[in-house]
Image (cartoon, rainbow, N blue to C red; front, side, top):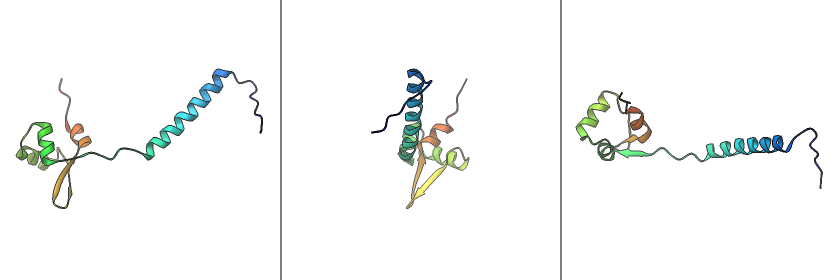
Length: 89
């Protein structure tokens, strides 16, 4: 077994170096396992925003919401919906 000697390194500096290394590795690991984007149907989106489907259609035409499709179904990303909501003063 090899012996490692740390010269001119305080225990606090060693602890901080280890913590930074672990944080970096955890962030790299976390990037590999990002949660998939949650998709909502038109009905779920209308219910979430408390509007009817014609309002969703109008917002889609006005480019306020970006639709995604799969096999004839329309979906909206939850993150896009949350970004579309503006802050009022």
